[in-house]
Length: 293
Ligand SMILES: C[S@@+](CC[C@H](N)C(=O)[O-])C[C@H]1O[C@@H](n2cnc3c(N)ncnc32)[C@H](O)[C@@H]1O
Image (cartoon, rainbow, N blue to C red):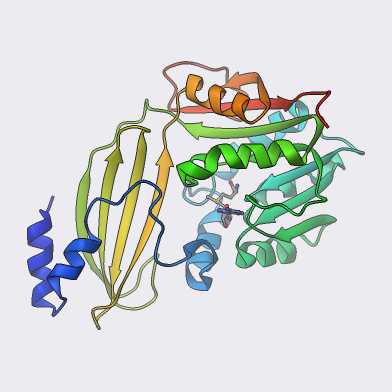
């Protein structure tokens, strides 16, 4: 593994001003934003679509065989049937909604990325309502009997937004409504690291660039931050940060209850495997109180 100093002197030789870059490479504060909104960047979102739609790649979505199993389990657990409404939060190109068409429930997909929604619409051409929006601010009149937030997306949000999102979900669920979501647990082990690569093009940019990938561990709360600094030949750089908070069952339970949601089923994953404390993933189905409007 290369040290930060080795990386900086390599870049200085390429003409990059090292003091400013050194600042950009410092340990980020929790919830520090990316300099570029990558989910809706046309090039990055198109790269993501390639990964989503490849059945055997676990990158932007789970492998399609796993999605099949999760959809079968969740269709039952969330009681999807005609007359019920389900909203898939962060639906991507609609891999889950596609599989729930057979339930004949009313389906709604919400995603920040217009590339994802356009891909989903074109791909499925089905009676699904598509909404390009940030799910932290859902349209006021939108209500559902069930919601899903899948592929550890909940813990990729800034920590400060996690309980508020659960409150937003409660507000948009009908009384007795259900939310299913999955997270990663502290059973996953990570090491801090730094790596540099020179690329002609890559996942984050179609142009020649230097990519510095750093992994930082924030201990309390436990959050893994993947920080990508992408430097073009003119010396301009962007920083992309992907956070992932690792949650214990007790922590997630506390957050759900704070938002007015009661856990009804704990699982190791959304395929329905029972909860086990040593599992690297954790899933929950939680319910809004029947008497809460
Ligand atoms: C890792 S992908 C998972 C997509 C889908 N759940 C799946 O498993 O196939 C995350 C998706 O959430 C969307 N997303 C991220 N943050 C969002 C937000 N705040 N509001 C709405 N969509 C968001 C992204 O555009 C992306 O399509």
